[in-house]
Amino acid sequence: MREYVKRIVLLSCFSLLAVFSNAESDTGTEVEKTPNNTLPAMTQLLIKASYKEKANIIDSIAAIEDDNKLLILQSLLDNKLYYQKKNNIDENQKRLLLVDMSLVKAKKPNAMLDAFNQEEVSGLSKRAVKKIGVNNSLRRNLRSHLSLLKITHPDTDTRIAAAQNLLKDSSGIDLAFIEKTLKKEKNSQVIDILKTARGLMLMKSDQSTIRLLALEELDGSLYPEVRIELNKFISAFDEESKKERSDEFSLAVKVLADIETLMSYNSYAENLYFGLALGAVLLLAAIGLAITFGVMGVINMAHGEMIMLGAYTTYVIQMLMPESIGASLLVSIPAAFLVSGFVGILIERSVIRHLYGRPLETLLATFGISLILQQAVRSIFGPLNREVITPDWLAGTFMVNPGLSLTYNRLYIIIFSLVVLAVLALVLKRTLFGLQMRAVTMNRPMASSMGIRTGWVDALTFGLGSGIAGIAGVALSQLTNVGPNLGQAYIIDSFMVVVFGGVGNLWGTLVGAMSLGIANKFMEPFAGAVLAKIFILIFIILFIQKRPRGLFALKGRAVDNG
Image 1 (cartoon, rainbow, N blue to C red):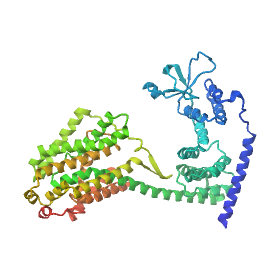
Image 2 (cartoon, rainbow, N blue to C red):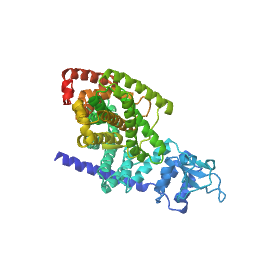
Image 3 (cartoon, rainbow, N blue to C red):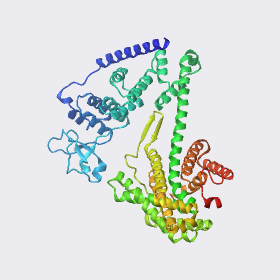
Image 4 (cartoon, one colour):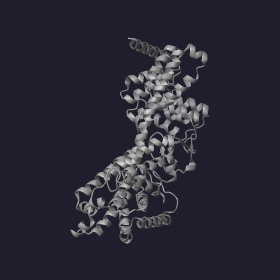
């Protein structure tokens, strides 16, 4: 019953405030609908106006009934509204243009457009036009007007962005407008943002009852603006006001504590997500090593360089396809597999095949090969890092709730790593090559006596492991810059994943990669990145003392006899 009464009081307060706001807005001066107050005429005034005068002109433009005003205001905010310096027809009527200087410098089409009919204007240099300038105060004013205009836009994403801007800066907005918008709005996210903005506005009310109801409405809201305003609200209390308004102070402290608790849960979820993403990267880097190290018994210190070659292949493909960044990334996956796989087969046929059964010598030999590959890349591409552009469909974040936003690129890498693992498992289980590789793993002499060419199986196995490392390089190119030392950062972690999960076992590699990735991210906040890796290394050393074959031991005669 008490909650019901509160809601009635709250709605009554909102209605009264809306009436007062409407009354105030009705008494204000309106823009007269005269020919001089058309959008082109008002925009012309911006050319010679001072910053103070521009503020009034912008207010007038926002009040004009013209669909084109949104484009004009947005262009003014984005510093793209220009005018032609010289006009042979009428010097008092300058031609207004929408100018993208990046396109002008690149000499691309549609660099200059007429501001009102959007027709392309050609034959003008950048010296022939001048920008209509704005300062920070005008930018705030423009954002406020644009938010009010976009809040009724048909596109849902546009309305969400507009509501978020209103939440960041609610100056110049009355409760009547928010109430009117809430009645028409259907999207739950926009409604939630507008209700939060309403609560923040009512928290500044002169009446204690309204402030209490506003605090209750803000309870559980995870928008950062709410925490900022609550901290300001609490810090404004002195000892005397704490006693006089104890109910407000205690409720504000409780609401803030509830929000902080929810934020801590979000932090755990974020660490879990980042841990899975790191585990996905380790999985991609370690799958190939699990094959070469687990199946062939070769300690391949050049495995990191196979990852590096895959990343550089992505960079080269992107240079060859500059107009199709998204397609270039898809082309890079098979290209990186072929390049790294071919180099892997070359290494196996020229060096590794002479060193089977001598793991320490393979370690030294592959370490030398890794140095050669690094220097070769430095000679071809230079010592500096190269940036690989992220496609639009990989960029950005998706919002789980106002306090938790997750990046798309990590989500795609998690999915991609699981797809690669599934395809590799199918190859090993369902193909002739997979059958031969498992036969060589279980009992090499018996496989050879059955007519299996163990030498070529070894070469193709090494090539397969190296090719998958190249695919890992494609994924890493979306998370970090590409450089000669890229693979060195993951070679040790890859060995830890393989040893921890079980040498040569794919499912052990999956469990090991995800476990170490999540453990690393959960320890980093309080231990730091370096100490977290040290703790994990100590844990693996102790774990291997108890289970020398890892979590999932590979079964076979060769293993049992080893």
